[in-house]
Image 1 (spheres, one colour):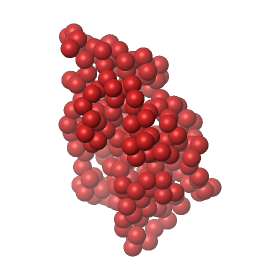
Image 2 (tube, one colour):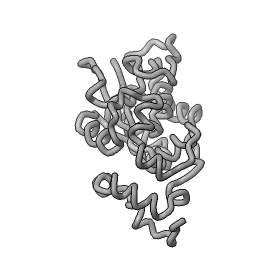
Image 3 (cartoon, helix red, strand yellow):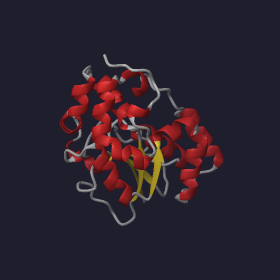
Image 4 (spheres, one colour):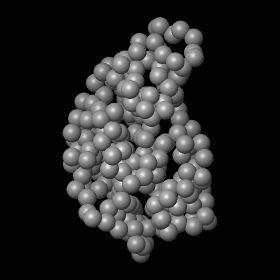
Length: 215
């Protein structure tokens, strides 16, 4: 059976794939459908009911089998963007905000079909069998990973969950939007994603309680 971890780029998909593959002691099949290549298959010698795959594709591009199950991992797009900028050597936050769909699509992920973060999230939350917030997974990895396995009736024991976390522990973010974003960046992010922030429980930038930073 196929367990596909989907999320917008830089949202923790690779980490969650490794956690699940180790917790289930199953193969990691790499990118589903061969739509990208930065996560090669691993542990193909493992014999198990499940195979874990990674995907960033939109629902328009992903060809799923009847036995496929989707876990969607959700991350604050401001921190996902900062992670992408660091990974791809970009420095202009405002430019990255205004062109984030092009950056994500044409840098490495054409299967996104040019989708913005909010469109990707909105569509996948209709189709996913389960969802995980990256921030919650970082804050309490054992509880969130264990709860995910139980809710999806995945054959992972408490010991295997703990061992997976030992092999792939959470890493603190190098930068956070609260510190990196000035007022103009917050205004741009709120204009693009404010409605989704409200729905999903992410605070808008204009409400972060920080002092004025208009640089």
